[in-house]
Image (tube, rainbow, N blue to C red; front, side, top):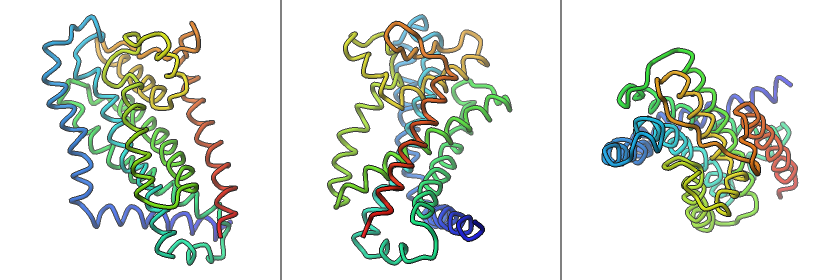
Length: 265
């Protein structure tokens, strides 16, 4: 057990050190979310009526920007797995005297840590949009970013196990991530979607993450943004259920991916 924990620690530390060694890349990953927050949020704040989003549009947009921030570093774990396999580094790693599932868990937790750190940097700008620096609120948002980062990292790793080239993985992500983000309620209420399209949000993990983040903010902002209200049919899904769904999704996909990872040659 000690050996397994040391292996996980080494992999997490490797990803964090890589992030610190490439500050320019880290900054560039934060540029797009900041542009959305400052330019899109600032530009549309005067156009979107407060009644449509339950308050200031920039506050409404902030949960979606947090998810966007953790999304990019989280999914790069999949790219690293593919590139490591192409270069032969993964084959050498698999020879380590630990279970293969441990190596996959370490990679996923490393990606989760990296994504959470970047999300925490953006979270520090919460005051720009008028959010209070309340300790409980900040810890709640940070905890949700950890869970969201973990789910996205595990999904990316599981997807990467079935793809042979970084180019194919990148194309697939480009096709999938933007629709998932737009169907998450990050930029507009899900009630604005057509009925058949709104039903797709029930299988979108980003919708659950954005909804919980927005509900958390609403408790600390007077007249705060209305929740995206992910629904199963006509039933609005409670925040606690959304958290459980995300946790079970992450754990389930990780177990499935670990089984596949154990059969790699």
